[in-house]
Amino acid sequence: MRTLLKIAGFLAGSVLLCLLAVFCWLCFYSRDLPDVSALAQYAPANVTQATDPCLGSSIAVPYDALGANLRNAISAVETSEADPGVISTTFRGLLTEEPQQRTTIASWYISRTMCRAPSRELRRQFAELRTAIQLERHYSRRRLFTMYANRVYLGAGLIGVQQGSAFHFRKQPAELTPPEAALLAGLIRGPS
Image: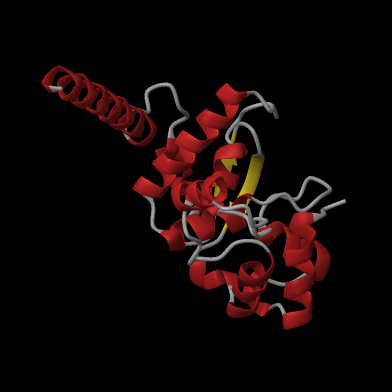
């Protein structure tokens, strides 16, 4: 009986050690991931020119320059500053059978747009998940929301809400009315 308990204890300890190693790999190892510190240019203190090798050049605006109407519209349609995060959303999706909400996790969207060709490979999915976790470790939800708004594709080569609002309405994002902000936020999901 004691031998059986020792074997069970050894197996339980081994499983726990493996789970801990996987968790550490997901959350802390980032050498093979894109540099997340380069994304700080998309959450600036002032309006600035931002350049990304994958997206090209765009104009990044600070959180306050997005305007309340546009922030509310994006929060209602796409992502929110209060999104639960990629880890809790992933585990909730694995543990429940209810359909997932259609909102976007800002960190996951940003990780998908960081210079990788679209793919459904499992390795790519893990890289995106790990990059999203690194983004959530390095940036606040508010900064991630700002980065998301400044990196979204709005069709016709328009990157970010500054270019989108200037092209469609000839206004700054903070000057958009609620219907204009709702239209711009709707373009995020279907830019064509």
